[in-house]
Image 1 (cartoon, one colour):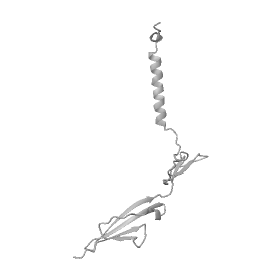
Image 2 (image 1 turned 90 degrees about the horizontal axis):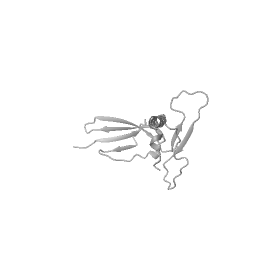
Image 3 (image 1 turned 135 degrees about the vertical axis):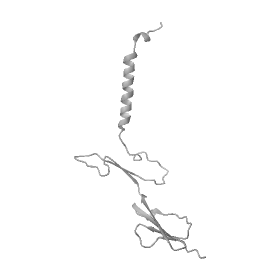
Length: 140
């Protein structure tokens, strides 16, 4: 019996597959040759009886530097002037670590401020309720 099983792998909407294999297969997809952005990998497999199955796997390629924007969110409605901070950093294989520009500055979250205010409020409450000058007399 002849084994005519085959797996064809397509990238995006290409009509010709970029690879054909006999199953099982293990291969490396080199994304450095694919432009950054959203893509899809379409795998078409043919069984020995001639039936075809298909699986589409969406993925996103980002080989360039990671871009972080603080101050503007996707589809946000804005007016007047808004401050925006943009940072871009990649994963180059340099041995030198550059501190400046490695992290995107962000504000302190509001829950941290609430926690600090609650702690300070409890400390003041405790001080007012239980402070007694008699407890701090000198033994001399």
